[in-house]
Image (cartoon, rainbow, N blue to C red; front, side):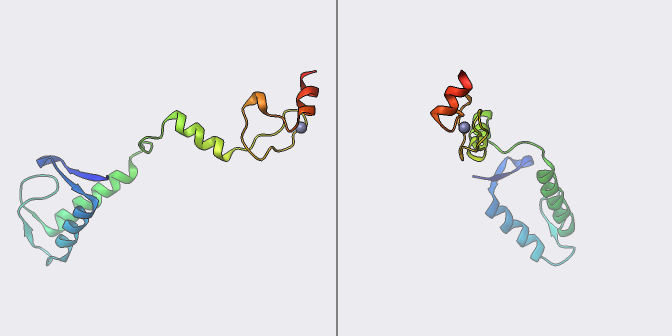
Length: 115
Ligand SMILES: [Zn+2]
């Protein structure tokens, strides 16, 4: 599950809990003081916390890391699902991905190619 780590107190919130918290801060009157902020144990105002929040969201979006679990193997599976091979002899689309050795539309094409 997607969780957000509040680094200074090692708490983990679900995205839902986190959204609840931000909504509570947002609902407060401007200038309200909170006991703690997202970046430390010191008190912060409503505006400071919201600013930290938008900064965090921006950081997350800007992270260039590839999606978790997308290994080279899974990537090649994805590519195979999208790619359509062509017959190596006549060039006709096979309508599916085939390994290089099997990339022929018919036994005739394979034979002609290999002869
Ligand atoms: Zn062919």
